[in-house]
Image: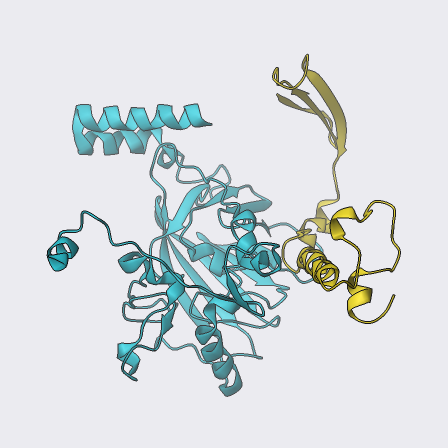
Length: 101
Length: 321
């Protein structure tokens, strides 16, 4: 349940209550004040979309495929055992395939 | 959401069944979105509501005959007319064809490409699946968003007019009031509007040049300047015109025109078409661990189709005897 309240000419209070008995033990609420932006500033047109020109996603997939091939060729570690959280080392993977590392 | 749909569907069914089509039409007009006043409080034509083009411009702005497939390939005989639907659409049979049209380009019906641009247009058409930004769910730009086969919603105020499009969740604000230029070029452009009598005139600039105009490969560059004109014909029909000027691509400015129709259903609303998710396999399938499309040549998918002959098909039953 959302409640939008105009506090003054430049401020809206946004209060939302979220209820889902299958997930939470009781309803919970968030309250946030929104400040009116300068209408002449035209920030709305930044088009902050992450879909067009998303080269990062296919490149990550491609990197994973390259690591799999390197492992299959005996040139790199098993990707399944790789520590992706803390190990940013250069062994194996792409480096192994391109002759680096 | 689901309940609301069920309720309104039942209401329509009961109305039609009980009182017939003529009366249900009048109910639509008095209770539906067409019941809004024809003019706003400031005396302008009231365009607020859900609208849709009803034509074939999204396939090709220019006049074209019906085609058997949206994607074609060489047939047995080396003639243009002997080409057959290509594998990606062949399995859809008659549902995959392209309806013909008299075209929406005004004057002689031709788009005045410069020679180099005409070559790019022809290449675009030949490589439709690889190149059309619509298939990738990219923001459609203006004017293409207007005549895609989906409804869009106009929310009209005195200083701003908001247009929300079904496809890709695209949206734009038309500034009737004073506003600074945009911080960057974009897919949807920068729209500045004014009223000329009952006509809403919108100047659209600052495009990034990545849009197409239809599925036939018609395109423009980032130098394009679109001038749109929305003129009421009746409260439920308006005339849409767009003048397209782009010195990089065209030898002169040219114009398209078409009616736009108000969606008259009492419960008309735009419903999300989250095509980013829909296009994921299309865009990224070639880097999947176990691709659903089995053959890729680089980033080109090679689709082989399997179609089972329906067991109940009489012709095939007869043929097997």
